[in-house]
Length: 149
Image (cartoon, rainbow, N blue to C red; front, side, top):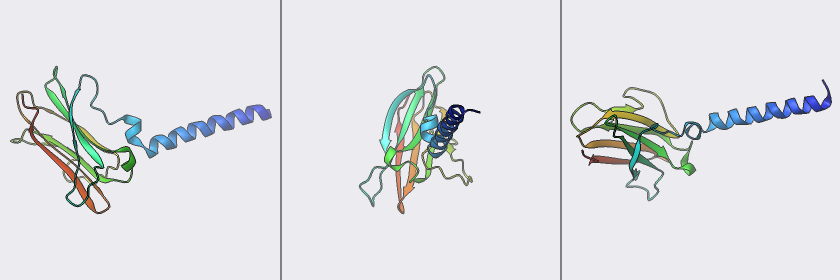
């Protein structure tokens, strides 16, 4: 193999390795943590703590009018990606079972985002919770009785 071919092979390997490392290090950027096509953004709610003025992330709610399903995702802000712990999201109607990520009893520890979670809520109000932990504080939001209809 010529020196030029060896250099090209080495550069190709380095580029592929760098791309794989970046994807593994930041799964939120790799997948985007989105609900998918047909979902329209409704509103984001900031995660807050009584012990800190920081707002490290948000709970976002979406709706798909053709399926009647809502979707929710809790995301850490870019500066907190990988630093936050135990990111959580749940979605329900206030009366029945909720869907959550991670599910109850799971040992998963999300550090970028939780969700998306989906629930058919056509004609009902949305009850959603988002939270994350950082620096010994829990930041959360409860969006209850929102986006009714």
